[in-house]
Image 1: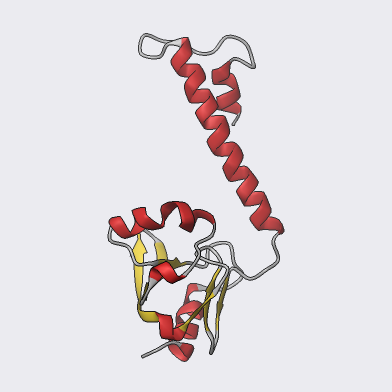
Image 2: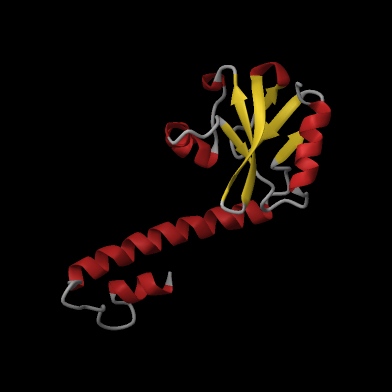
Length: 145
């Protein structure tokens, strides 16, 4: 965000060059301030939220990054383990994805994720106190075969 403030001119003249006019620098500065400001806000809210992000039990899967509703096992067509670079995911294929009111980023990016070939729901343990192996173990223990 500091670079954004610099680009909009809060610390003096905004940077310019042959390829970057002052107006373009200011625009990019505001985009940076908005983007990083919102991600800081979301990160702060998540940091203070004590509710579990993921819960896997006999009832189904609670994936709060996807929806505030528990996804019953009868609504899960299948699941698989996938990865992007070094990030591992448990991917859920839902019987009727439209039956769930999406929350958070899933509401904004759900269609884009499916358009790129990803599953309906992606679970990862980043930001939790559990390991990926524990998530996979819970899916194997409780999930459909």
